[in-house]
Length: 114
Length: 220
Image (cartoon, rainbow over all chains, first blue to last red; front, side, top):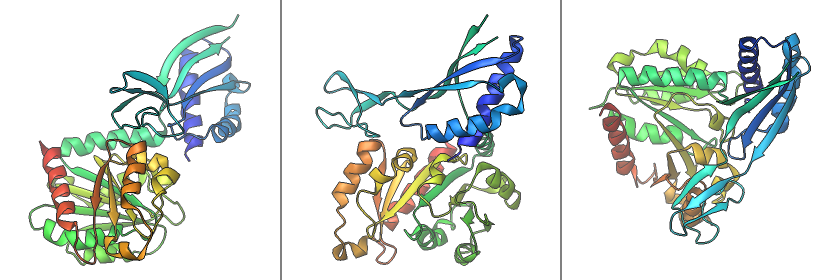
């Protein structure tokens, strides 16, 4: 829903980090997007491409998106499981006593600069 | 030569950043802020109409109403005697932190115990826009589907409370209350459930107690 705003924020973060390291160009941004993050990745990619040309630094930047599936830990079953869709109940015991281990990320893992 | 710089940096939208500063402001002023969301027609305004009158006898309350057009809802709230400001978005299907920031000019946060934000009727977009609230309440009515939480997982996950409203109409529908609760908890195990009817008064005491407890916890 607010993918354009997120794309702008990514450019802002990346621009500042690249400047800190004296980079001329940002080749790639590696982004992790969890399935629960609420971010529509195609829309984000589209928005990013639409705004990246505003600066020479990011004109050719590739936004590489790694999808992160839901992973939960169930205390009663003492195990870790991949969630189904957005559900965080245990697939084995169908209990609610679970802890979310991954799946709601929206973070820049790293950037590749020249 | 290409260098890889590790950041592991969370990305927050402009709205998230502004909402965080609003949250700080509300915290500093000790105002409890509630964001109420739902599909159009689930009964958000009615719930407020029925309970604000008595709550405002002991709590200082302000309401921000969000709609695309009209100030109908603000008029209904004004009739309860509680100060209210209507935001007419003109087209935006959700409220954003910036709109809330501007609307605060109409209130003296210093004297408020509770600020209620009634969002635009929409279960999709408001889920993505943090308004700096301390609690998010989503309302669903029994005339909707009991698979609603599954269809709108982001809203369910971001809500602290789900109010099941229009319980008086339950005999006329196929709505399965146990199923909707199960569906909601399968996405958000911590979600709290309330059942209400603005017609019969069912559950309105629990709703009022919930609000009072929230204000008390917020001040504590």
